[in-house]
Image 1 (spheres, rainbow, N blue to C red):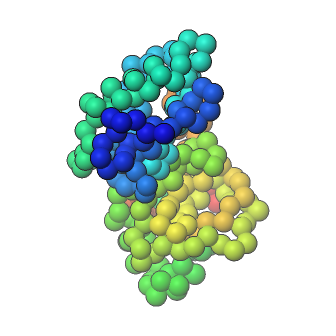
Image 2: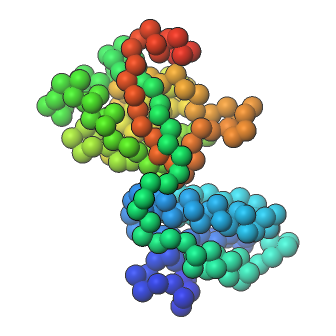
Length: 237
């Protein structure tokens, strides 16, 4: 249920998501502007609420806030959300968040779906690689596994649907495309995305703080490297 103080556009909307959680909807579709605002609001609320906030979970167009119901209630948290929203820069368009450049070894050896995707798009493999590199991607969400950052949006010319039969094992570091999203698999797992290369950068390390090199709102670019450089950086084949 949205508050009367929500803007006429209908967003942001603040809804109860559980006995100790609220979710803020910033729009009905992801965008760079929405992603930037979510990152800003999440950071401000973390600073403002301190120990009252157990966790915050940013996603494509929403922010889930889980609070300590033994210390506060949803009325207070809602008021703090409105206070932060009133200060946020709605319509923010300038680049924000950190920019991370990830090296990628693009090849048939490291990306078994590269040639198939190129044929489907009626492009050469080199054109697919160029189109994948030229875009600056926004981190829209993190999941289904720790360190799995959903990046958008891929150039529509190389967008490709998920595979009808997922692989039982996708190697760690695999760079992949599904629809208009791209991602780097943080560790070996099943997966149905189209594999076009491998990245030697560790995307999740629970022994480090922070455990992931990116967070929601950050920006990512990819940079092609050759096989020797990939191996020198610690990549495995």
